Length: 212
Length: 335
View 1 (cartoon, each protein chain N blue to C red):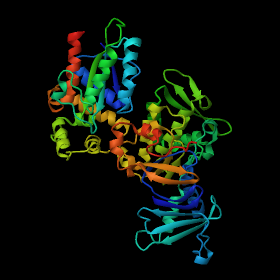
View 2 (view 1 turned 180 degrees about the vertical axis):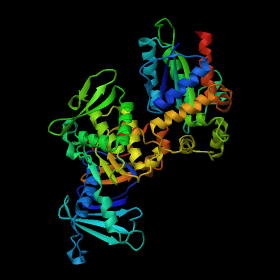
View 3 (view 1 turned 90 degrees about the vertical axis):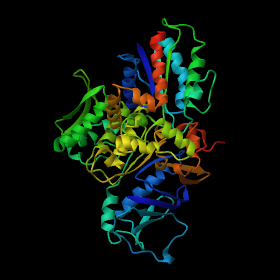
View 4 (view 1 turned 60 degrees about the vertical axis):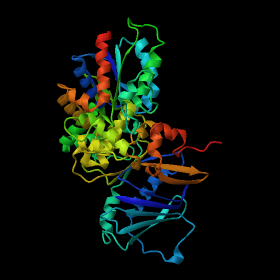
């Protein structure tokens, strides 16, 4: 399987690749060069062009996109209902971009469409890294904080808890990301339970194996 | 180091002030005071070299001329330094005044030593690429002209520091695997980089401009005795947008040494850019971004973090795009 990852930094890409391997249960080939976006909303703006490029110009089988939710509406089971679309939910928006941009493409390179993998890190990828290490950090805690107006932690605090500074350099980010996802890769059940928006990404990827 | 600077009638900075952070990224249109901010600090350094003059009496003051007033962070927050100027651009008089409270009231010598170590860089790739005399290998020159000699001296006298510089360079530019520093018979040093997996060395004049600028910035960031204040104009010049994160990290290394495990004193950094891509990297730290605005012939400063609606604006746009759109200010006037 040949896959592309659209991420914000090489550190994120490396960590996401390890989680993908854990979900898929094996190695996959990467599309080069690595795809980068400059955070939201740049991801949403550049995604149609990336899907088109991968579909027509490469033999990639799938594209994984992971973005931070920041303060946006968190994807819930309600959003999974057929035809449901929440305009402030980044998962709903990115899935819609995939849908709109793949349905009109003719088959190319021996496949009908690029497989979709969308993950939203709530509120930031550092929360995934802390899963199983910091009991306070979970998607439910963040959603409850949104409801009450009192967030349990800030994105800067999450960075501090992972890196020991809110200004980590790329090397430190990469090293810590690797340490944390290597800890989790043997058993993703906790990550999928505490972060349903990661579970949604994992479901996307597992569906590829059925559909390929 | 410098806590704030207030301007009156200095070039386009007619009546404005700015609180300075440990790290300051200054954005704004051409001619809006970015360079003037740096020049004011250079003028302070220049006048700090001279013996202090007696305070002016009220009758001697020239209210119509330019004046720049600096306040400092501890341990020098008990002193105020004021520059009086003979014209809109040239200051000729430094007055240092003790304040009613704060530390360092009697330590002008200590503050002066810190100010004299301030450096402003405007790197030039052609001069960086030229051979430089080994004897000039002390402090990096303002245009980076002696980079080869600085690296040669560092390699000789501080091999661990040089090794860290080398490791970082080849991590960021993986097409190279070695730094070549060749001493010629006239005792000048020539710089080159060896291409990975070959014996071929690319001489400095064959290296990309961005690679030369990156090496100069790396040399600053990995200096174990850096200046107290570093100003760099157009920090993004020649650098690929994907490498701007590395540039930001290097500057943070100067300003926040503890974040990379360094134990030396922090360096106050003031840098300018016209790159929306670099600005994007400051989304989590808007307090580090200074916007210069120019209306007609008058310019003033604002801090990005002063925008109360910033977080809601960022829900639908990147910082760079918001800046370009004009809603953050800091864009040129158009007819």
